Figure 1 (tube, rainbow, N blue to C red):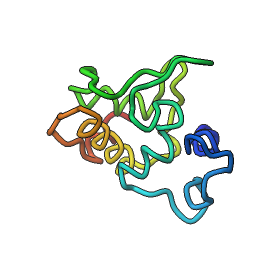
Figure 2: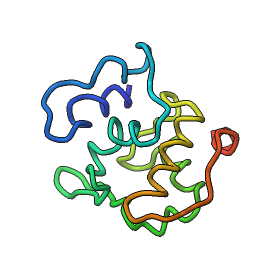
Figure 3: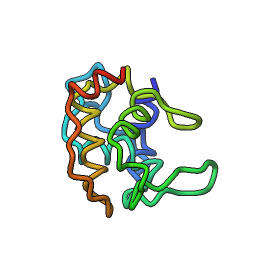
Length: 125
């Protein structure tokens, strides 16, 4: 359910129309490319530049974020959520979680080179 809400129009910053049907769980597929997942699911709150936002809620910056030094931290956040961050564990596969975490940890000013694997993610479920 959270995925469907986040993949709605808010996930495509500035667009009022809903996400393509193939990004909604239960349809054709949810991509396993980290960049595609970030832009489809995460940027609606964390912004396209990953600098976060303040407004109706507080959305932390992922850009230049030292908390991402440990791959476990963002993986657990994506899987289980916390506070206003919804859980995506039921909607995303281990491969997808690893892909989006690896993408965020290697983009937006983050330069963490150790890669998270699907097997690593499975341990956090």
